[in-house]
Image (tube, rainbow, N blue to C red; front, side):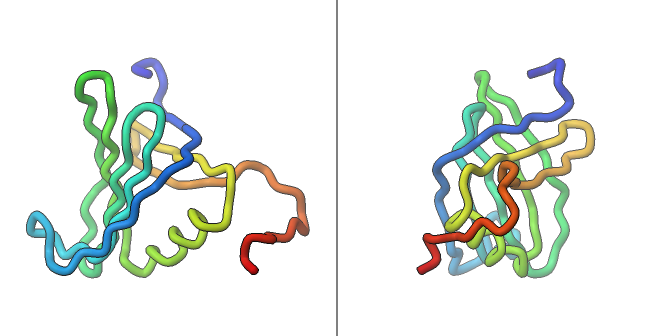
Length: 114
């Protein structure tokens, strides 16, 4: 992994957190944790701060800390619930991150939304 400037990994499981109070001094309302092959992703959705993304490697496993605006939470839940396969991308040079689908045919209907 050290020779690459980014990772992109498919994931199959996520966990949702709804916070009742501030955590670690942050004004975070929601959280999502993704389990990826190289470790885990901790996504925090906040109302009023813009903390930079960062990553840590410990014992061969990575933890990616991703900070997003609270108004992006429902869009993330929607894609997690209705799309597959899903991939997590992280750029080690810029700390940019996103979740993406694979290529899909135009006009594909989502049958799971019934």
